[in-house]
Length: 281
Image (cartoon, rainbow, N blue to C red; front, side, top):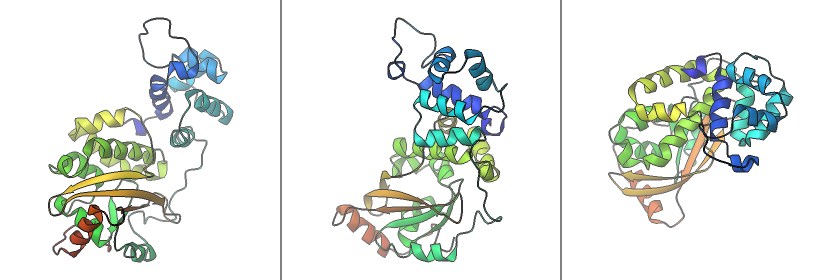
């Protein structure tokens, strides 16, 4: 798995360079090109470094590029905020804050109590490898069709109902891109690496998405569930980082007030027999 290899920086830069737009970079397109994106020499010009020096960085022969060089490369590639943060971390130029202890899989009691303060929304806590660590009643009911599965990545890429219940083409890439962003934190590698190894072996869809080297946080999202008991449920999601538990994220999905989805959530909340993850974690 490339996140565990020495040249994670080079792998990421190569992928970003391949996705870069010639037109946005200001280079004229004069004819057919053998490779997409920018050539090494073109990126070096934009970043203001020698082509040889940039090649050494990408090939893993230059282990300690300065913050100024990495910043110039990030600007030249026009990276997003998430991509820049990931680049700085894998270049070892950004602090990698580890949990205070070995409780990455535990949710603070106060946060568990907070989940129940969202009676009309789906609220749950994810760990760095997207394990569902705690969930309120509505979130548990939404995930009930997946039985006892507690990892969103495994659900999306191994459960036979995943592409029926989720808008899979939207949710799956966003999940893998966010997982790779989390994997840039060395503090989370211990829980993410085994998951990625399994998914690379079992799912070609996951492998293709993972190897694209795309990173992006979960942030705001719009999700549609096609729940077998209440029908379509459309939710607007917001993601919050848990300040005192690095790697944990609180996700809250709420429907439009007075919408059909709000009625569907109310009905779902009233149904007995949820076997999904509960607020107890």
